[in-house]
Image (cartoon, rainbow, N blue to C red):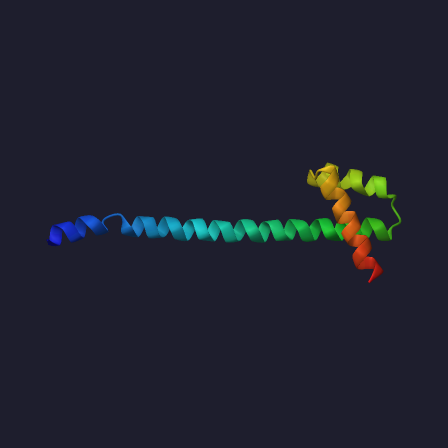
Length: 85
């Protein structure tokens, strides 16, 4: 009986450690993503404030952050909405 309990619990520690690592990595990935978004928002705001043309802002967002056209346009739209408030 003791052997069956021991066998059923073998690997439990490594499974638990693996799950902790996965959760930690997911949190770090999310934090890195949030920082990336904040950087793009600040760059968009700065370029808008510097009166850079919209087409150029979109081009730069796509070039430096590898955004799709729709994503770059959305950052610009959100910045205008925030600026109007």
